[in-house]
Length: 267
Image (tube, rainbow, N blue to C red; front, side):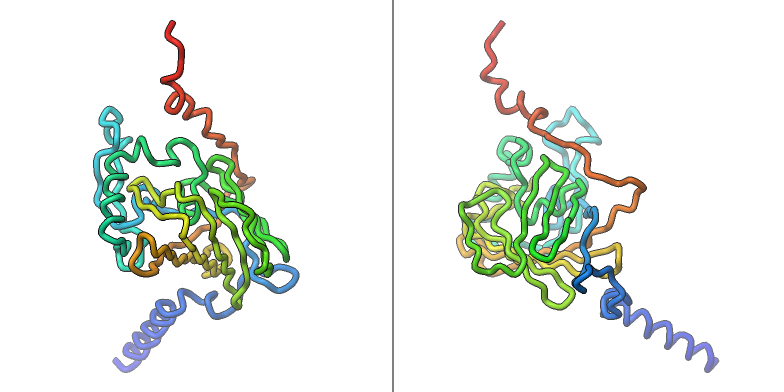
């Protein structure tokens, strides 16, 4: 009986270690590294889940086109927002609800505009990270979107507002930290109409849990629409298929009728 208790105690201790550290790699340092010793994030990654529909917890629901039946329905999801709810002001929550009611018409991603940050990281498409000492490039399959992250260049100012923002990075130990500012106010976070203004500041944190799993966290601040900063968090998984690569998905051609069909001359 004593031996059984000892085994149970050891097992519980191991489980506790994993629950606290997120796995052996989180503290053991056995993660891929670049030639200069920094954590190596090179590779093709993808999130899993339904956050691209709604980053807050949500039940399954009808899609915007009833004719599509089950394949056009919206799957339920636990959400990726810490605490489960975005801390909107009353007016901003009302705007979100109005956006959601007309998302097929209003969501910029439906029309193939750049998704913005953090949305680009949890769309149901892979993306590739190319890392060097001075820059980190993110290449997204969706719409061939991309962004260049400038490492340890804090004085480099954004020339203009842009869809993917101005990205400045540094390393905190084994965590890549990216400060994203100067995004246009047009991007949404999902199909549910969750939104921001040009004052949005996103602080991203990429941390290896293992060689093939990265924990992604982002803190979002925008005093124009939120009552306090809030966070999203989810894992990214390395795509391990043989010859995995990003494929062309220039979705503009799929939206021409949606955007310009009303301008076509009658026969």
